Image (cartoon, rainbow, N blue to C red; front, side, top):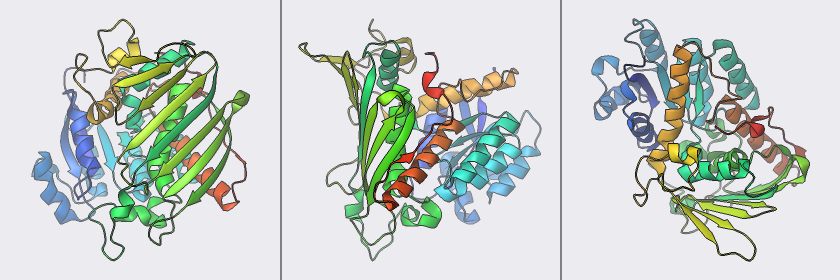
Length: 398
């Protein structure tokens, strides 16, 4: 396996959505994997027609997920795919991931991992039973300066972290015509397909995972207010979330898909006793460090700079001054997953607790976060318990 590229099967991505193409590009960016098979649409004809644009041989362009898994599992070990990437609507994540794990394949899955906590728990159990690698594509955790920030916090440069603020603001819902189905993403307003949350599940889970990933703070309680302001739809398009972490730290999260002029404005601010950090996804190559009475320090993405941590340096591909962004961050999550897959082939199983990339545990946490936020909002913002289910926040630095 070390002498060849890992073989990838893509599930979904053949329609008008963009994320399937992102998976295909990110997975192959470092030439460590090749896309060789796919079931690109729930419509067999559309899926097979889309295969050519992805460079998939017609013989391995399958009409359904079941056909893909059955046929690939029946191929010799030196031909079958090594992993499947799931880029489909939320409600299909669980059955596809379950079937792929049971068929013996590693899994890379979009978030949220499932639409119910019971299904998320079942996937946790399956990953433990099968020993397969499970990667959740919280791709923002792959940015070099996000990993730099986490390393700085682990090394104590902020002192004790006592507060974190995250927000993810978009405005695209204002562009929808309520009398005309959108070209893509219509399922996101359908609770049966999207799950119990709208903007919170779609983008709020990214902000929550980013706060957890960088700070390592363990949640204790959550209180949320979720609303729908644009178009008559049952799911939230705006929300505020308050968090209480263990040992007294506080957090807040704002999520919106109805803020005019905002595109993908994901921001993170972290306060510590010795300093504060600020990072913005739309300017991802800069990280701000502030201390009282001192000039603001700007950390730039630069693998050759002495201040760049090993984790930040490992996440870079280009010299400083050449911007890296969404595709590269996405590819970093894939690259970490590939390392785990190769280790698995060498007889070293992946421990989700020790993994330095988003795993099935992050998926479980994200679904628990969604469910408790929705329950809190329905209870007029009542404080409800929220647990991480593990101690991943205290993992040693890589």
